[in-house]
Image (cartoon, rainbow, N blue to C red; front, side, top):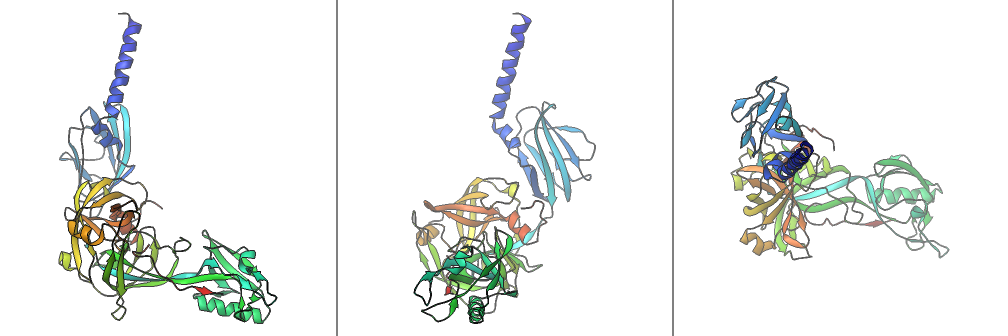
Length: 453
């Protein structure tokens, strides 16, 4: 066999070996690591190694974590890994890691951020959510019949769009639909055009509109339906007894007509009682039917409505008999695994109950995303009562191995027994309990009052 032939055989053998390695579970265990891995002090991260692999660690301080029991220090150089490779965190800090095949071929670079161990009290409480938007939201057009018998929509003709938020009129901030109607009518009586400050896609702009006298109402109007508030039932996810901060819902509250997120001017959460369940079926998501207990004290305020739900501060301590009102540890997303778990939620009155679920899929994320895991309801009691995940269950805490790992966010319309959950990491960051390292609807459909103007 000549040298050239041997070279070809060697090249083919190496290529086959590399392809085989890339399809191995051990390779995927390393390659699936996200660019940034968040682990809390005392947690372990384990991955399997079945081929010669080394890791170069560049920590910002000595003693940040151990690898297979050996404390890592700066300047250690490459560390040969054996299976299973276990990273055990020891103290707060950060480190850059580079995995190499045969100590030479780069496989993966990732960073580890070691965060403080946290404990919060899991929720499960049914809450009534009342939001008042910043300004008023344009949700539709309302044609105006003028005194000459013709029909007009002055706002639409002036390029006001559904989904816009009206922040101010003639320099005066607006906060309610009735206030907007009164300003429009008064300006029309004075024969003055309206200067409307409008927010659209994060940008503000001014529009000039001339009010039109409505033949039917004998008031000046511009042809819009607007809304200034939203209300619905959801579930609290957690609260921090140290700071009073809470998080709920697991996803943003949007307007039911425009599907636009509602900018919060002010809001509150109150106790809610579940009086009935609309059973969930394939193609027809179910719903919790709740009653606001507004005669009781307000539970807390709402200062943020974002992709991961609503956040604010409690005005009074709340109890959770399902966990004896005790705080439990929080698990970072790298600790979540497929397998059994449970959720806390209310299906009758105000009684928080535990129900078994299965985490079927886990997708580690580099940036904030609400669909971090897929869960399936396995508890026969809950399936008999609701058919699976229903509206109003959003925010129900997901607990695995005694640790809070996330919250229920969405139901699969084609299969109400399954749905998505978000990782608790992102919710804790939005609540200000964990530092943000990367930039980035309430349970039942809210009901609204529309005001034509």
